[in-house]
Length: 273
Image (cartoon, rainbow, N blue to C red):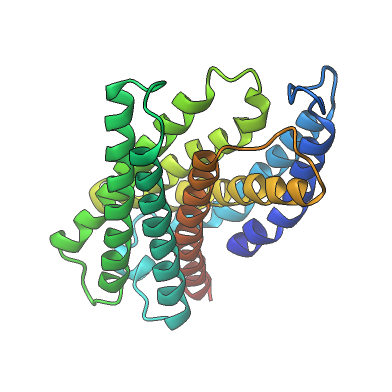
């Protein structure tokens, strides 16, 4: 039920985020409107999601001593297709981001910032390749050390992704415009950390499920809400092209994590039966 809840609750999340963008910012300046309740409505919604996901993820605490192959080993065709699509989206968005990094006006960017974004883009492309390789390894009877290394680059990328997103938005006076996306990126880092922890530390599948579900609902709500708000005619909160690509990268990574949660939760259901 947890992955379904994460996907289903993104629908009202998109609506609430769109209402926040529609009513929570000044039409002329794009600055947050003083006293607007919509940011708190969205915050309360995501807090309730966290409580629900925590309850749904609690049974996974019994799987902390279960080997990775039993938790995530699968030959399900839909799972493989979904993860490959998510990985290809990650590669495509990262390639687009790399293109914008090389073609953008560099007068307002320092050299280290440019280098950071190039590394970020290349890490995103490499992470997509690693995701595909790791998906292939999940169908093996026993996971060896070589494919296990494929979880490390996505973890590294998610950390840089958070750093780049924070650097690009932390000084913006419209921080509430980006805050939910930043929180989604924090959850995404924690989700990839716990995927790696399944192989390199003490597994905590419950925390993986909790952070992965939160990352998914917040990322989908943020990007979908922005798209819906734009369709409703909101122009005062327009995102730059790079911001759209970073949001697309978050959503693609969350699709991958959500697919992993489907396998994890289905295996836990089979074990309970």
